[in-house]
Image (cartoon, rainbow, N blue to C red):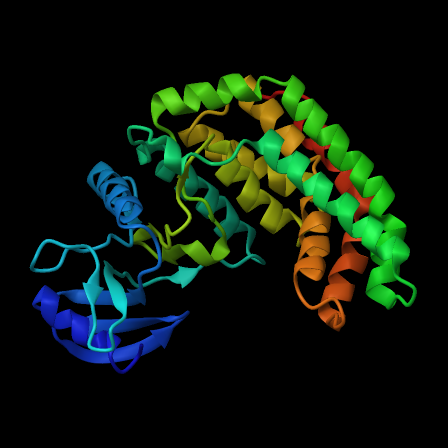
Length: 329
């Protein structure tokens, strides 16, 4: 890509005075500011919807985003000299949110709330996220399948022994979470989100929000955008952070309060967040990665991750009630 992807700039009337590789893309310094060239790997119609979404966000003035650009022919995707297809996006200076800096995390929560205020489009059902109830049930089936496989496996390594010994309690918790979600107001919330055309970033993490001192924030990498309850983004971001903070309730409340100041969280959404955090997402993720990849080789890093998840089970188990037990707004 790095040799040939650069050729697409001519289709935008741009030339690069310098380039730099960044996270699987090519950052180009041009006469019209920094641009990012990356490979195009999604359906053309979804890319068009992403463009419209980013136009909404940009026009709102609430925060910046890595807006996709149209080429001189009006297309969003451009074929390079290597035969590959690429997109070109605006790019802005800034650093990734630092997970060890609580001020950054509060600032990112504020930016997410502003993003959600702007992120609305007429719903297209083909880009609606799978029901969380169905997702939890599917994940539970996968945990059960992995447990059955390990029960019949004669020789087990350390990771497999840990996974099998802990599968029962995590599966029980997963089944409770799925049942609670099904019995809750989730479907009503989902219907309302559809009516409002609520859009999620889909992968809002510390890597996808850029912070620039004195000049605001930029949301980037909208590859996984979808129609869903917007608290899904908030829950995703918080889970990523709180796993690193041993489920710190004080930090969680600070993030929630900052978000609520900009984009209010209803009582029903609060309950939905609580149930989301009762599902053993990290445990399922490690188990599924093991089962869907080469089972004969397990990295020491994954064994460490599983050991940490199991060690935090009690703290994680207490977190939803401690954080969400009482609606504060």
